[in-house]
Length: 310
Image 1 (cartoon, rainbow, N blue to C red):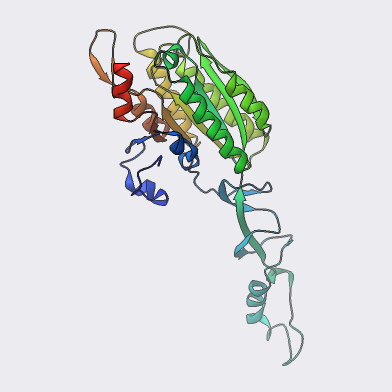
Image 2: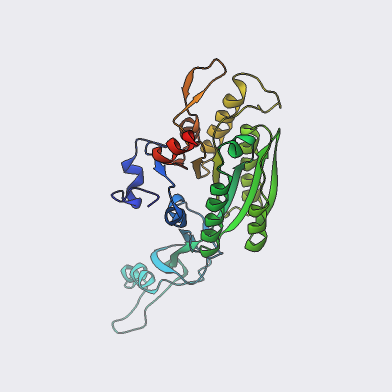
């Protein structure tokens, strides 16, 4: 499976040592088909009108599971038992005679609080740089993306897609539920150029915030597919250390805004070679920690070994 068989998905926060504490590998077609396990969304206090199947949320509809009651005006969905319990202690003061009608007042009325599954906005932030093609992983990238789209369709989510390459991040698919169009965007993906990782993350953050301003009940989730090998900074320059520093700063900003995110590392190797020829840890984990994201790796160590030999 995408996660280890002995890991309870409902206890992932307890199992890992902070974000990116456990590595999970996307190994085969069957594993990729279970990609819905990648996305976990924490609860919030917003009530939503739109229904979906992604995460539990309070709802403004008069349907869904009744969880509790509250005092609010106006009351549109009366919690009868809670209303009676609120009125009962005051009956003698209100002059009710034995066997008479219950004396109710507006302050006694209680509203049902309901919850049901809601939909999310999945923002796919995709590394379209040369390094993806260099490792011959674009085909696997597309399989993962198509699996994510299929899962979003089943969960009634909206999806958006942006690709970063050269010195820019470009929205290739605005938020939509047109999954035929989304699939065409995936099939037409191509790679080329440098890796403006910070710019891609920043565009993802801006899109999430724009959609949240348009509809405060929108729940955006960033799904970042990259090898983390940033080489273009926010100013468009190829300096030695600023590209990754900019990317980590933007990632921390995303975490501070409490936008859920998932990091899928397309780099199959545990180390990379820097400009001096020295081996350094691959940057994917650091990026996931900065995002506060769950961390997944494309390839198992065995697959990485095969890629090296190939």
